[in-house]
Image 1 (cartoon, rainbow, N blue to C red):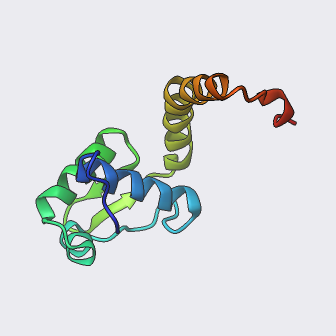
Image 2: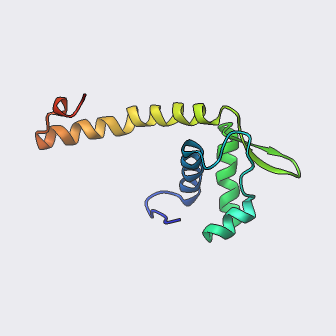
Length: 112
Protein backbone atom coordinates (compact mmCIF):
# COMPACT_ATOMS: atom_id res chain seq x y z
CA UNK A 1 0.00 0.00 0.00
CA UNK A 2 1.38 3.40 -1.00
CA UNK A 3 0.81 6.19 1.52
CA UNK A 4 0.11 9.87 0.89
CA UNK A 5 2.15 12.15 3.16
CA UNK A 6 -0.71 14.67 3.27
CA UNK A 7 -3.18 12.37 5.02
CA UNK A 8 -2.82 10.39 8.28
CA UNK A 9 -1.93 6.74 7.67
CA UNK A 10 -4.72 5.41 9.88
CA UNK A 11 -7.27 7.32 7.78
CA UNK A 12 -5.74 5.94 4.57
CA UNK A 13 -5.97 2.41 5.96
CA UNK A 14 -9.62 2.92 6.92
CA UNK A 15 -10.33 4.33 3.44
CA UNK A 16 -8.58 1.36 1.84
CA UNK A 17 -10.71 -1.09 3.82
CA UNK A 18 -13.84 0.79 2.78
CA UNK A 19 -12.72 0.65 -0.85
CA UNK A 20 -12.19 -3.10 -0.53
CA UNK A 21 -15.67 -3.50 0.92
CA UNK A 22 -17.21 -1.49 -1.93
CA UNK A 23 -15.26 -3.46 -4.54
CA UNK A 24 -16.32 -6.79 -3.05
CA UNK A 25 -12.90 -7.89 -1.78
CA UNK A 26 -14.39 -7.90 1.72
CA UNK A 27 -18.03 -8.94 1.75
CA UNK A 28 -20.63 -8.29 4.45
CA UNK A 29 -20.28 -10.85 7.21
CA UNK A 30 -16.75 -11.83 6.23
CA UNK A 31 -13.76 -11.68 8.55
CA UNK A 32 -11.07 -9.13 7.78
CA UNK A 33 -7.39 -9.59 8.66
CA UNK A 34 -6.46 -9.06 12.30
CA UNK A 35 -4.74 -5.86 13.37
CA UNK A 36 -1.39 -7.68 13.47
CA UNK A 37 -1.94 -9.43 10.12
CA UNK A 38 -2.92 -6.19 8.39
CA UNK A 39 -0.05 -4.24 9.97
CA UNK A 40 2.50 -6.86 8.92
CA UNK A 41 1.15 -7.06 5.37
CA UNK A 42 1.45 -3.30 4.77
CA UNK A 43 4.46 -2.60 7.00
CA UNK A 44 2.66 -0.46 9.56
CA UNK A 45 2.64 -0.54 13.36
CA UNK A 46 -0.35 -2.57 14.63
CA UNK A 47 -1.39 0.40 16.81
CA UNK A 48 -1.94 2.42 13.63
CA UNK A 49 -4.13 -0.34 12.20
CA UNK A 50 -5.99 -0.58 15.53
CA UNK A 51 -6.82 3.13 15.24
CA UNK A 52 -8.23 2.51 11.75
CA UNK A 53 -10.33 -0.38 13.02
CA UNK A 54 -11.58 1.81 15.87
CA UNK A 55 -12.79 4.43 13.40
CA UNK A 56 -14.53 1.81 11.28
CA UNK A 57 -16.07 0.22 14.37
CA UNK A 58 -17.37 3.61 15.51
CA UNK A 59 -18.91 4.09 12.04
CA UNK A 60 -20.40 0.58 12.35
CA UNK A 61 -18.68 -0.54 9.14
CA UNK A 62 -16.96 -3.40 10.99
CA UNK A 63 -17.55 -5.08 14.32
CA UNK A 64 -15.44 -7.13 16.70
CA UNK A 65 -16.34 -10.61 17.88
CA UNK A 66 -14.17 -10.93 20.95
CA UNK A 67 -11.61 -13.67 20.55
CA UNK A 68 -12.54 -14.31 16.91
CA UNK A 69 -11.73 -11.12 15.02
CA UNK A 70 -13.21 -8.24 13.08
CA UNK A 71 -16.02 -8.70 10.58
CA UNK A 72 -17.69 -6.56 7.93
CA UNK A 73 -21.13 -5.37 9.03
CA UNK A 74 -24.12 -6.50 7.01
CA UNK A 75 -25.01 -2.89 6.13
CA UNK A 76 -21.40 -1.73 5.61
CA UNK A 77 -21.84 -1.00 1.90
CA UNK A 78 -24.79 1.31 2.51
CA UNK A 79 -23.00 3.07 5.39
CA UNK A 80 -19.87 3.64 3.34
CA UNK A 81 -21.78 4.86 0.29
CA UNK A 82 -23.79 7.30 2.40
CA UNK A 83 -20.65 8.73 3.98
CA UNK A 84 -18.72 8.89 0.71
CA UNK A 85 -21.63 10.48 -1.19
CA UNK A 86 -21.92 13.19 1.45
CA UNK A 87 -18.15 13.82 1.36
CA UNK A 88 -18.18 13.88 -2.44
CA UNK A 89 -21.03 16.38 -2.62
CA UNK A 90 -19.72 18.63 0.16
CA UNK A 91 -16.00 18.55 -0.66
CA UNK A 92 -15.20 17.31 -4.15
CA UNK A 93 -18.06 18.72 -6.26
CA UNK A 94 -17.45 22.34 -5.17
CA UNK A 95 -13.73 21.97 -6.01
CA UNK A 96 -14.59 20.46 -9.39
CA UNK A 97 -17.05 23.25 -10.19
CA UNK A 98 -14.56 25.93 -9.17
CA UNK A 99 -11.78 24.36 -11.26
CA UNK A 100 -14.10 23.94 -14.26
CA UNK A 101 -15.12 27.59 -13.99
CA UNK A 102 -11.50 28.76 -13.83
CA UNK A 103 -10.65 26.72 -16.91
CA UNK A 104 -13.77 27.70 -18.85
CA UNK A 105 -15.02 24.12 -19.02
CA UNK A 106 -18.74 23.78 -19.69
CA UNK A 107 -19.71 20.72 -17.66
CA UNK A 108 -23.03 20.44 -19.50
CA UNK A 109 -21.06 18.98 -22.42
CA UNK A 110 -19.94 16.09 -20.22
CA UNK A 111 -23.13 15.37 -18.29
CA UNK A 112 -25.35 12.84 -19.98
